[in-house]
Amino acid sequence: MASSSEVSNPSARSKLVLASASPRRLALLQQAGIEPDALLPADVDETPLKNESAKELAKRLARSKAEVARRVARTREDLANSYILSADTVVVVGKRVLPKAEVADEAAGCLRLLSGRQHRVYTSVCLITPKDTIRERFVETRVRFKRLSRDEFERYIASGEWRGKAGGYAIQGLAGTFVVKLVGSYTNVVGLPLYESVALLDGEGYPVRSSWLDAA
Ligand SMILES: Cc1cn([C@H]2C[C@H](O)[C@@H](COP(=O)(O)OP(=O)(O)OP(=O)(O)O)O2)c(=O)[nH]c1=O
Image (cartoon, rainbow, N blue to C red; front, side, top):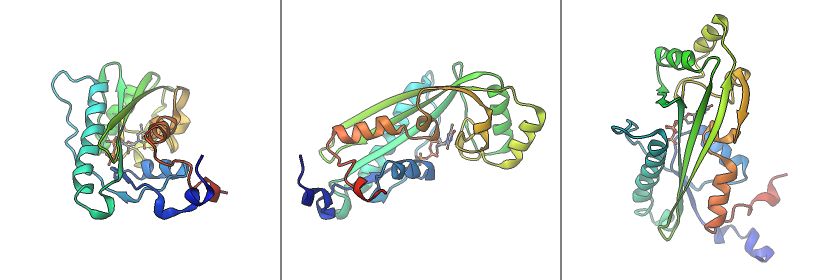
């Protein structure tokens, strides 16, 4: 067990890079008491490859994001020995991968497919350690939406909350009222499954609970 001086000495703390531009992923990490030392978003092409399954897509993209961020981090003296964490979230109806909605038409198309049905949300999390070991976790959550009325549909589109969200909705916002049933991890749907992400970091020696003393 670490001594209290080790626990409270910030200079001894390992560095963590979150390879993400998603405010949700940052907020989820912070909810777990983990404050990344740097944000290095990776702009990767998210187009699925021919015959690529949704699971393969999420895994490939999470890994690419981490690898792009690693290249940047390893050139920076302050981040040279850091852990790199990334994730990718994909929403699937049947075998169909829904887009990350950027315009209202895309969001409307997603909502039509999601209304009154069950869908799956996949998030793949990738961790690269200071020793360059790559670890991954893949998490699936099943979500069932109520059948949306025309009014709900139109008002949700008008809200704009779908913008930049996989599957054209955000469960942490108004769309939370559409959820009849959820099986699995809620934080997985928001974009970073906390149990699995913390387990990954913990398993590779990152001090996940070092700031918990200050949390109250
Ligand atoms: C389904 C769902 C997705 N989302 C968000 C999480 C992700 O930000 C986004 C999925 O797109 P991603 O491509 O996984 O992530 P991103 O481009 O937003 O961020 P980055 O690659 O820089 O990490 O959708 C929600 O916020 N709530 C939800 O309910």
